[in-house]
Image (cartoon, rainbow, N blue to C red; front, top):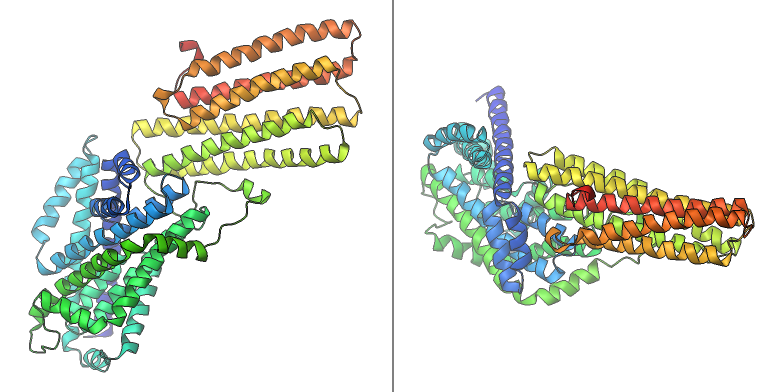
Length: 571
């Protein structure tokens, strides 16, 4: 074969791997969309103990055909406070078992001619994609057809390479001493690095099966690549946890440690373990008389059997040591002391890796509730300003309020960007409506931050002018602040609760109280200035605060309306 022939085959292999990764992605996303919120409910409800957590991880990974999707989802749930670290570790253990199904599907693709199934799947899939109700089923069929078609192409490319008749390749692999642990370690490292780079354990498994099925790659080295793939696949969860909180980063680290510990004990008993697996599936690794056709049929099954045995036994052993594993990751990933600088960091939304729209909306909802809590903290700082007359203390607190105003601007922008990313996906009408509502919520929450800052600036004017409110004004402002704080508390309860559990009339009633009190104070202020109870200047600052409180109350009601999907006028 010429160099051009090898180049053409090499490009065909790369294209087939790309098709495999894309097919897995489309199939996984379609299954997650079909499941919708059910995956979230299952993950949240079925993790009461380590065994149900493990079974849940296995079930979800088998369902969506992606351990990366399950682990990223798990890290997200820990980040959002919906799962504990111990629960998450058990789910990840189950995900490692669930991902073994992928290896069996691939071994089937190499053992059976799936061409007759692939093309009808494409035809049925394209018809369903244009059907509104069944489009996700169409996506799933397209994804699985792409995956099987890529396996057919890889198998054909492997045969075209004719590696089994290439003397240089045969000499290279035969020169590697498979009984030497250094060779095993080298291929283990190669499998880890390649998986980290391509971010797809399925692609590495496909390459391994391709090389083994040609008969040139010894089974022991192929198994070393598979072990490396188990370590490399943890990179996805660790990348997802980079921008997350401490518990989420610990979850990702637990995933890495779980697989590393498994690889360590397998390496200790490597040759007896591999030989046992080979015998279990009726394959003798020392038999050199097998034809290439027989090797092509048996070796993919051996790899799948090893992958399953490794993950099942590793989980069976380590599931009893989840508390110890939890302590170990807590020692490795230290919790950070909460500094003021961390107040500007998003708590729940993670950058870098997008999940399914359902999970992404959950994170955005949690972040919006955190936004609301921060705005209430900011308002309480503004309330505290009223009691401070020392200029140094006032300036220090005012600077913190000013920082919070910047935080509110940044949070609005970052959450809006995230929601924009979500809206780029194929969304249902209900999900699109939720995204629109959330965009309105964050806009109104940022306006609350502006209102708080305006109140603080008015108080700064009072301090600079070295003036004080009279006792009656202090009492009235304090009463207005109390009403506004009640409104903010009610708003935050709306943001975290389910719609059917919330009573919007409570928020509207507080808003009416604020409006009525503002009108009462405005009339009274004109009378008091005329009666010379205080100067016109201090009366102006007094009413500026009252008016800004009333605006803040309006913004609060707007958030509640967006959250509940109602208008006050319709009630």
